[in-house]
Length: 115
Length: 109
Image (tube, rainbow over all chains, first blue to last red; front, side, top):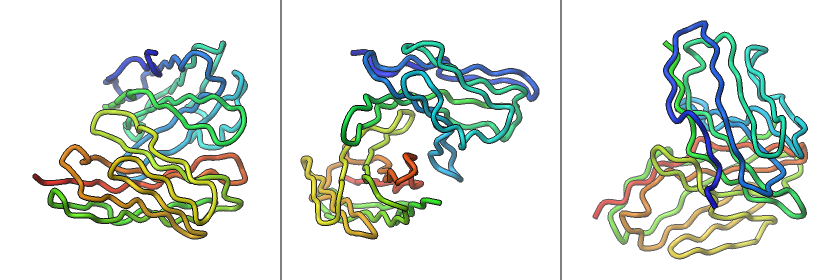
């Protein structure tokens, strides 16, 4: 299994530009999570989907952030317009939500730098 | 709001020197507590899930324990390859996972 795939791995952009981060979850998993990690705040949950439906987006910091999951094998996190304070590592994770507490499998992350 | 506090922020051990990492939590209706390991430049890797106070889980040199207010990750006779950041997270009644900021462990040969 290839694990969770994220692209790009690194993104450098200028303030005001649109940024799109991509994620392919593990095949067969039905839950997908977007996280942001910074030194100051650690790992923060932004939004999660269950069966392609957004369940909780209370962690999305502003309207500049949006996420979609058009099908079970693809999700995007978009920031428009981007700002320097959005600089962080963004992780996507997936899990199989059935019974009990499913473990989340994380991708390698996208390091975003907004100049 | 659920809260997770990990201590210490950083820990430096000599190879073979056992120690413990702490994770204190405040959560409404704990459904589970997770430990993850994160290596530099990589995503967190799952280690353990603990469901209720008194439960213990072991994996190689690591043992995780849980009480009603905190969890410990005990590291017995650590090796340099155990160097990483260890993250604790809780799943509360609101179906939301909250992570701590982690403990950065360095094991010196």
